Length: 332
Image 1 (cartoon, one colour):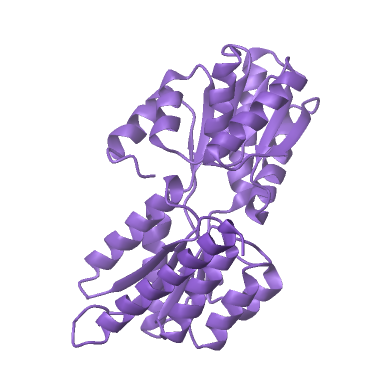
Image 2 (cartoon, one colour; image 1 turned 30 degrees about the vertical axis):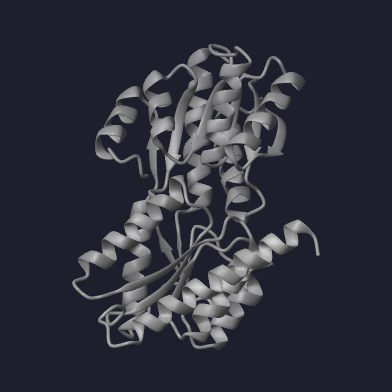
């Protein structure tokens, strides 16, 4: 067995042991979980997902009942996600709330939860449509096409104001998940409607900040006259900003991106690189997820499958400053 395999096995074993202990405690005469027990999976522990976690916890605390959240940071690992879902499904939690790691690889875990009688609530991402319709109770989603359309419209207005009629744009994507593909389609539709001679010269994956920096720098090397980046999510956006700074392209290459954070808000206040950012508040989505889980527990399932999360566009230094004032803890 390799060192990596042994390490992963130890991590999974520790996860199972921790969950078993937590679930045992919940059944030993304590009030923990009397108001409901929800398994919650975050794809990451930072940025948007940290906001989701805060929203979930705040809504649970304000419900006035003893709600227990059994939480996992899946770290983009479908096997880790699957182990957690297996454990909480066996424990018969009242609902499973998750942003699945993969449209396809996450299907077996979600199917298991459904067949174990555990209602499944997706947020931000979900499994493929056919499986989602069969196994998922509700999907909390900020319309990804509208998300992209708002950015594409803002980008087009910027280019027209600058007299740039044929801008060259590089995309740093997160298109391993379908919502990011939809964001690009909305962006392109709005952009080309106003600036028909615009050109997408590159579209490469860079979900994490470090990955996105490397990808954006390669795009700048291949296209030194690049006018703008479109970062489809938070890591892609911040990576593109840092690459523009590192390659001394400030004043030439601008960025339009997604997902607000303290770093993104400060970049918007500076306004020399980041010109527009669209955000779906993680805190708001977390609150919606906790509220939906409580409704399901009470037997009041949502009438609609897709529950729309609010989308906001930020384009000015004043917008960035206001966001910082409203989010002193930095959680989006």
